[in-house]
Length: 306
Image 1 (cartoon, rainbow, N blue to C red):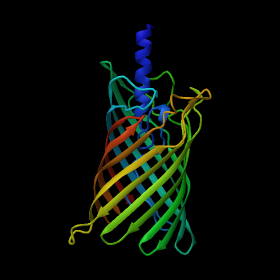
Image 2: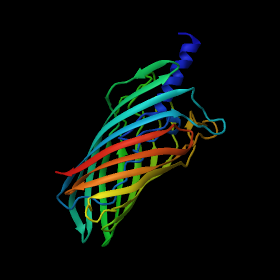
Image 3: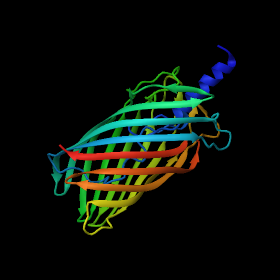
Image 4: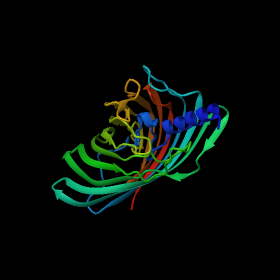
């Protein structure tokens, strides 16, 4: 294989990694990877089912990107365009009450990804494949005040998705992620303000001896019900803020100047409640991007009690 072909394949693989969707989300390049689904938790993020109840969630995400802003001497990418479709299902179950207004639950999410990348007039597509799942061993919910909920949980993303260092498109990351998570929801008859924060600790990718840095992310929504006669309708602003807090390393050495990623996502949201479930449509545009792909996300989500 010529040096040109080898270099092109390496660039294509890097571009594919930089937008690979993790569990119903999207990740940056391995050199700034995220496994937690950034931007997903933008509706009643701290409110879980009552004891004995189960809720089903379905997520559909389309992500499109064609830019990769870099800083310093961190590795960049040649011109490319990529699109990612994610189909994910999630189950949350609340097992017991731990005390007055305190619940204990758990959950999981299964994720399927179809990614296409075009680079140097060559198209790569991995087909629909299983991605790394999300296992939530516990969630503790607190109904603190009549209009205030707080929940603390822990997410584990095992390295179970398809990954090969020789493939251009992978749906797994090649490493596991462990994420403590804290959510807060303030809810009145007309107003909702929800924040969901998590901190990601990544294991080392043993295929490449690459260690992605730790990440802090906050998903947010501010929603309002403007129509008195249609309280099921909510309009709002949603998005996320992500900041990488430690450097990427490979073989024990810092990559570039640390290759720390950051991004701010924002956009409109429309939600319509149906009984104890609902439908949600949202758009998230990315700005202030460093060392990761820059694009747009369109989500369609729904939830129903089981």
